[in-house]
Image 1: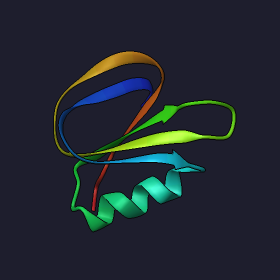
Image 2: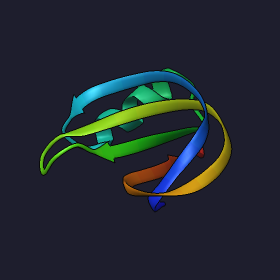
Image 3: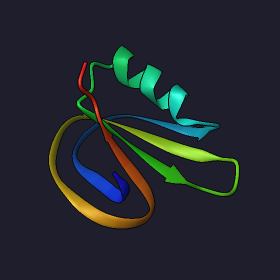
Image 4: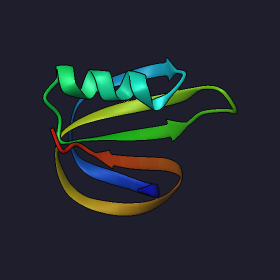
Length: 69
């Protein structure tokens, strides 16, 4: 969900990633429920791995992806 941040239990964080694929891989490795992707600048992002989601909040520069694995 673009412009949306998932709130919940953060278990891992990755700085300076290039795309969502790095975030998805970390999500699978940490058995996550969702990830938040934050745009830092034009080519760099930050990823938060969440074990569970409590809610969703509108946030500029963020996107929430829920895992269906």
